[in-house]
Image 1: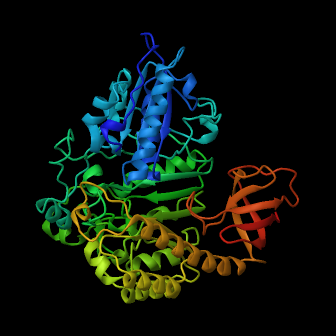
Image 2: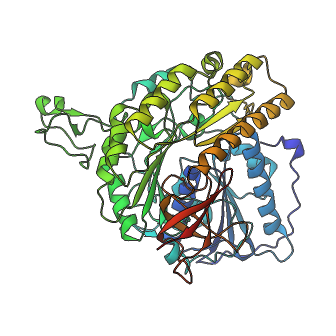
Length: 558
């Protein structure tokens, strides 16, 4: 977070006014899709409580900034957004009477936010989403049947004109704290004893870690384009990565039961969603903390959609059950009528099992796509990161995955400039990228985060060296991507049309099943074929006619 001495606090000039009984609430959602789901949940709760949602800050009685605190740039973006909303609150004639800050920045700097930005009226952490009602001054409403509003239905509730409150957005929600029956996850328990989740040095942070999980009954307003939605299948993280503070921000890893996720997916599909992306900090750990509830043999009395919190009647039956895993969840979701595309983000390399790969290969509507953040390829750097692995081991995993899943698309991310990274380490990473030939790749400069174990490591890499290394890897990947995209020319594909291009109204943009929402390249459409107009959120058959470094050009066939 920006040091207190650099936070400028504009003097408040707004006159006191009464917030209406049915207030209008404006949202800014920053950061990752997981955060977007939290925003969708809070918007759903507020709407359920009687509020109207807007994306225009000037029309809001209450402003909410859902923040990210993963790295320095994200923290700075969050602080900038808060200060921008302060201006809306205090500006002459400003309508907003209340400013609420939510999300990861609150978990890290709870007291400091209100101390240094007094215009902030309330804070809501990642583990207390249901507190958004009290923070807004709205009475809690009785729990009602599942209520997800699609983008089309939301048009009546949210004015979608672009504004400061329409910067980043995504899905998820809950109107009451729900605790599922979970059994111990040995890895998480061991890490907790070793101090992995400690917040003792964090000024103002709550001692208790977040435990919140939303349910299939939680109200939610989708902020994603029409036919697409995210489902958060797990929250938190137990991994020991030394560069990361997400476990302290979001708590120990915890999974939702399969039955709850399937029920949410069914309700989403009933509302018109056709593409579902499963998200979590590490989806491949899914189910490891849940009680045994999946049959280990064909005759056992259980099913993938059975509640994992069900009581087991006898020791004999208990021994016939195992914990659910991601492959079970995929097998429960893939056959749902109306679900055209299903994918999951993100995978941990040593959690990619043969069964998971075989499940991906077995279902046409599951994306042949793996997003595996490897972070580095040098064994010495990976050891200091507490990630483990080697370049050779990663290449073996990649080869196995491509063998079991023909046509597999691979995305990964790397961190350059980690403390102690030598020129030799960087050269090894570059050689690995050349050998692996990833379809999609992101490179991030190391961010020195106070509270992360790497913060105390010596041998820090100069910032100029870090940026130089990042640029070299992205140039290397650009050449790899350009060659790979050229192989798409002439291919017929199914595309999901999203709408006019963000760059020019002369083109429309779409995605194939090989393109994850927002993070990968686009399919740009310059020929509507037999159609006078295209409908956003609709699937079409198209032919790829040109390729660029990351994007493709296509014409609609039917």
